[in-house]
Image 1 (cartoon, rainbow, N blue to C red):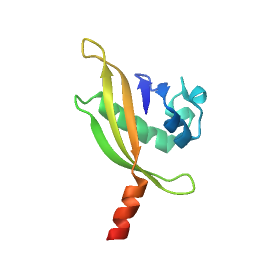
Image 2 (image 1 turned 90 degrees about the vertical axis):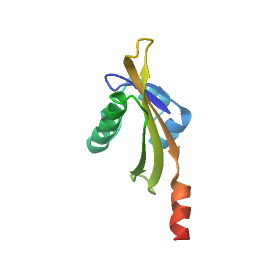
Image 3 (image 1 turned 180 degrees about the vertical axis):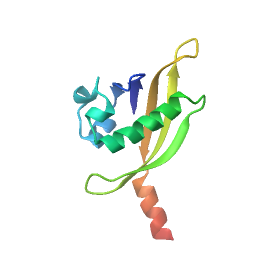
Length: 109
């Protein structure tokens, strides 16, 4: 789970995010994705966050990441956090690791 302000800076990350990213919560808070990962991935993630900020519904997408010892697959839900007037002030993302499920599906084929 993470949340970023409108400038793209992390304001919240949970332990699982930290474990998956390899950055501590303290290292991530206040930083932009582009300060923590390669530019191509950072641009992709920013586009997805922007889509969620501009949508009035949560966005859900299956995302594949390879950068470690194995490819990971996440089902990621993103949505705008809004104030009492309905104005977005942050984007929140909840990523669920579905790597094992996807591997099982491939084995059943």
